[in-house]
Length: 434
Image (cartoon, rainbow, N blue to C red; front, side):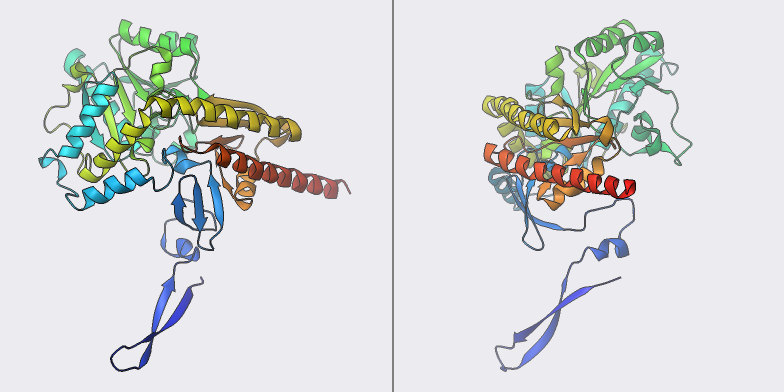
């Protein structure tokens, strides 16, 4: 355990005497000393961001293709968000849900006007939004059909959060291991498999929860026929369609919400991450009929709908819903995809570039399977942030406003990282053969 201390000699203005004052510089070692070990953060510590660039404690610059895992939808410290947050900070921070506040009412109105929804429930994270969505679906089924209608259909490799309910709905068993007993009546089916969906559906299904793009599960987009089949079967069996847009929403795919690409209308939608542009806020949206099942006392959130988060969320929606912002997503996607495909071809590392809009997955070729984290670490060393989606997929989720110059510079740095990984593995293979 190591600590770094800096001493500064401060001049006493009245007596002319100096005195020592210890000033502590935060060190990465503090993580190992003071924080639970459920993360494995990088050794560098970022301290400042502007747009799509970040600087660490040593002043080194990075280009950010990770976006805080699709959270920083407008980049770091966007001037409008700073202005709105600062203004709200001088007015009202928190009241809890015993009062309705102006920022919450304004944001709820915006969300209903811009989407299919009639009503909104605010919370603080994607997991909470999905928790509320599934509770609402079960409550609605209980009120209208009886307690036997409780089955929830979810999908393999899905990710819906880390609460016990949402981690159970998630389709990755390793996230659930050791946390039982788990909530029941949740079935996992293969993603994009209409035949399996039709076989599993019956009148006891109360809801289907689906991501338009499975982010954590490998950046796999839902197929149009699959989403239509979910809607059709939900209609036939009086079940609710829950669309989890925590990662795909708020302009990420080139429409305000990804469900718009499929020509369907969900009953419930969840949104988080990008809607706060970096400030924690989430929401569960629903039709008026469904929303009525959350009567007074059935659900709540102390911090949900706090004025700070809602003020920022309104500003984010103003910018993201602008047609020019949404149109720019496609242009940026094209620039990134072309550069990634060229890197993939030159070094034989990417089998496919998939996803939607600025939620991008680079699938590693068979020769590089299992080595996604090596590429992530090498990218960081070259001054660019990326993500992984499992061991075989590199994931990019940059700001919707990232400049084309930053895309170009970031791709140059990423290519150097790929080159470094290839060289390291070639050297290792040569040494083994020798």
